[in-house]
Length: 190
Image (cartoon, rainbow, N blue to C red; front, side):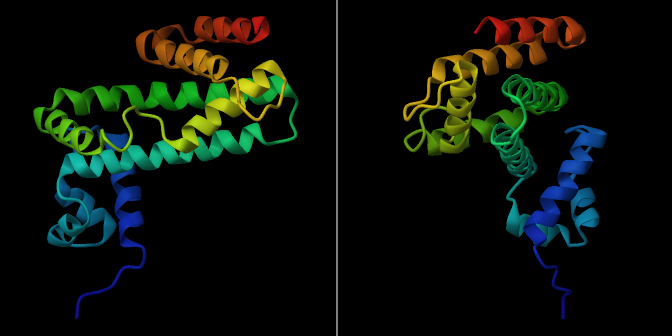
């Protein structure tokens, strides 16, 4: 009788995340992931149909963890500016760390094709990339930036600082100190 592994899906995602982070997208194969997760390759394919599907699931896990961490920061009792900057730091660091791996995934034809298939299947459900949880987070950040709790969060300010952090983390990662001076100045001006 085969050995049952509790929470195998989560174990697979955790091990795949570790392997992708350590080795890069191209260097990881499904055999490695299965071995690290303590399961067979055939069983791994029962959970994730392909390496790109597994990678996108790992990306979803990382994104969910980032949203949860940012929500915790935003709802803490820390001073206002400290919470805003802590969220931006967390977001910036995660995106700058993830950017190279995402670029590697997107350079792979199989990865791009799978992503286009997924987007085509889900476009009618969610025409743009932000989940309700992410929209809530952006609204919370926007409300903090204006220091005005409101029933209809001022999304534009949250989007502005998140977009600025995203652009700097992905386009100019070698200028981290300068990027942070800019983001702190931007927060002060709002």
